[in-house]
Length: 259
Image (cartoon, rainbow, N blue to C red):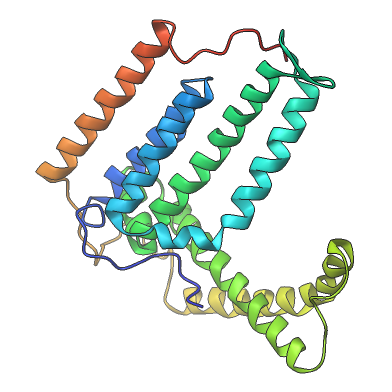
């Protein structure tokens, strides 16, 4: 399995300036919080998935489908139980609380999917360069880029270690979910040791190359706003403004819910 989340596709979304994709990501994080009605949240989800379809990166969602389903199930259960409403549905669950729980689950999953699409269409080098061009200190931008690179690498290391233990006879599939989790705990030790060792080598490599020795930096990767970036940003700002106008006019609300 390729540890990198980035998928190299020749689409207009991949060719957008990384700063444009960052603004779109922030907007996609904000858009689900405009509405409370799950139908409107579902429309936002369709928009995000359509964006991922245009970028041809929806296959990456198979990596996180279990996380998305788990978050949705637990969110719906918790908010249905602890929320309140005016219309009884069954037992102690009200209809408004169920609708609100679905809306919250959609919000969380929309932000996760939007982040996955962003990472699938933007290379780590573009993220670091884009943050630096926005005025963010390069050390912070480099730290963010490094963290995004290390997460899938650690996951790949864990997968390799688990496969090596399976080849030695370790049964990780039998038993209930708690027993399987207990079997995975000893695998964390070699994962952490491998991560610490690679981090130490990485820090020595940075020092040997004089990282941070000079305040001024040059960039091999050159980025610039184009006409496509301007059109996409204008269209999305208009979409976000329209969504806020709809909510202000009374659409997308959820009446009767009590926290």
